[in-house]
Length: 246
Length: 235
Image 1 (spheres, rainbow over the protein chains, first blue to last red):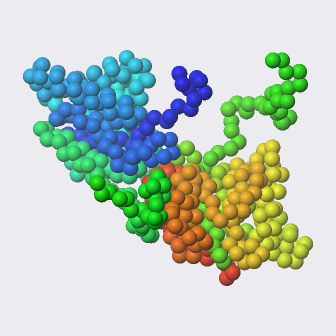
Image 2 (cartoon, each protein chain N blue to C red):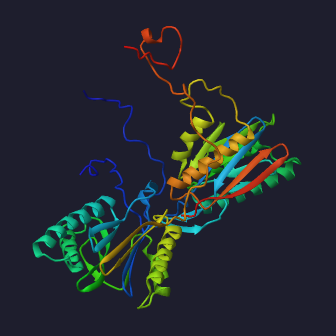
Image 3 (spheres, each protein chain N blue to C red):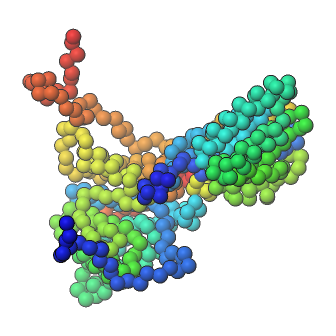
């Protein structure tokens, strides 16, 4: 609306992003980079893109950061109530259905592209959910601007029956492919391993982009900042010291 | 109130053809950042070397700063193809000057030539934001900053490119002492200028997706041009 009037709309913070998921022998591994962008600027160098949905379910989010955050929070809430209502551990298909019905209702205006993974009573399940509400059920998936770089790793190396360590290494390599070859992705690798009855949330599993030490310190000496005070207070010296006596 | 003799009606339009090329754009922004800082008897130029297109990297090392003579360096940002062509044209004209005048072009002479070369293509500009650095007639550090059509300004320091909005205010504060009470003013020495240039780039690399990979640093003084290459983050 404001855009019609000629105002330049503020760029919503998008996650740029590389997010992935893969199924291995005993469960699944989710992965994500940690860069959030607002246009060409890095807004957050270490944001969390792997969102909690339920004790046995996590969701990676790409697209508009606010949309992924609020949507996953909302479905997490709904899942908790649903779980209490049914007296059962929530199923991944339940989260998938809630997400897709919510997103479809908004016809793509909610810019959330998700990689949903969890381990429930029917086994491990991995889905992708698109902003318009479509879903895919697959053994390995990638989303976000770095999805092509990440998928090139999976397509070369994925096979059924991978071990946990092979799966984690592949996810790390896929995310790093996005971090280094996609400008919308960067910084660190977050990993989440979900198996039967257990979740390992490995925040900053890899940190391949630590900042080097700066050439010098930019600490300002005291008195550098300009200030203005009433003439009465300034009488005498041009000093930075305030008289704080009662 | 009726105005019988309006001073200002519709803004004048230059008689140039306006037709769409099916959405095709002759220009591409290849990203990247450049800066130059002048000292008493030296000048420092620094440019990153990443060449990008949208979210893709075309090259991790495609230098953006070029030596035009043994005492002048041209730092560019904008469209890499136009920058390369611009350098080619300048180099050729500098060579012809040398044959005609039997001496190398001085930095101030090169500066004016660059302005003329840019304006020559006023109606199909080089999409380049050049910074020319060298020593003036008195041997003092000289930095000339231009817009794509040739507006020239001699300055003490300048930053151009995708991270210019991040780097220029940093230089305003650290080189010119802006917003600092009791700053003496005056030019920087070589070591200070080099440290500031390096920190400007590591900081720009953190927050600008188009800046990174490698950094080229040139220090120009009476003895010639000293080059340095440093690694930047590759993400």
